[in-house]
Length: 243
Ligand code: URA
View: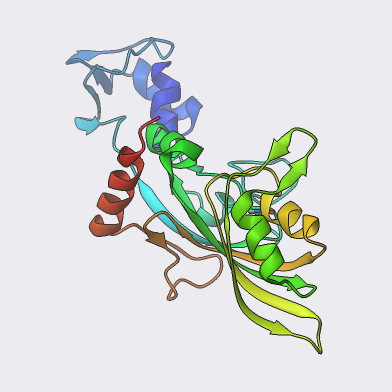
């Protein structure tokens, strides 16, 4: 990675400002003034800016309560993204782990730990994702069994076994509230699984990802760093199923 890009990823200034700072000798790489903004870093160098160490591998972990109507992406020309919710001062190398549909709400992990993201999303790492779902239609034991067996949601696509836990049915409104646990994250997976059972998802909220639970004190659109205990539990869960 280029030196100026690295510093701008760390949100230390605009590329223009940082190029100037480098040319002015304010950035040292392994103790020597860098001078060339295009200098390539291998990732092992010690970089300082105005004497302060800049550690590339400082990893960050945030929990964000995704509201409806926001795109799960780092940036988009037209639509507001979950990272836009985090404001200007955030580091630019952060990204959301996994994708929630625009209308889905709930738990989103935001990090710059690519290795952790990869492990959390790999089906063989056995990290369950738990959702609360409101369905138009009355689901029954037959649907619970279908979820447990795996459901065909595409020509060549059958889901892994999943758990449908019916919490409440309302015969008058014709709706069902349930908890759904899945291990994968296929495109529109829960909506397609529910549709295959003859229902329609009216609302979907992610409550949990492995050991990480949506903090009920976090309002939609709010975010906070993971606690040390949450971070440790998440890293342990991901390491359990190394892919
Ligand atoms: N399944 C869906 O259909 N949508 C989501 O956002 C997440 C899981």
